[in-house]
Image (cartoon, rainbow, N blue to C red; front, side):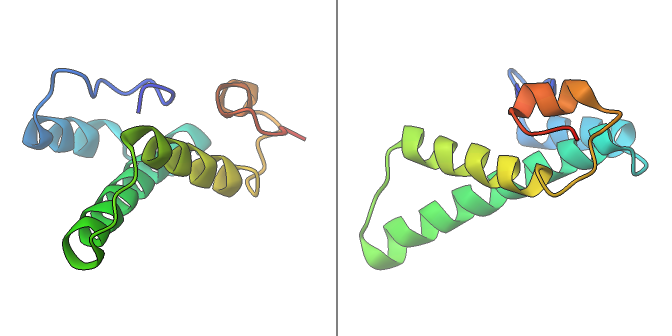
Length: 96
């Protein structure tokens, strides 16, 4: 969420969701990238929790974080970011 510039640090879950629901309206590339970050992070954390509970396997937080970042980067690479160089630069994806 830091790469997206979202104020995640210091906010409880409910406060963050309240903030996001009022600030992330619309379909601009920056808003879509923020929504994508949240969705991918929640999915990967949920998946890791299920693996720990039901399969007895465990990944380090660093591995989970890299999986989240790689998934977001892969998804963003399919977007047309030609006029949104900051997003492309922050996520290290091609903007053309």
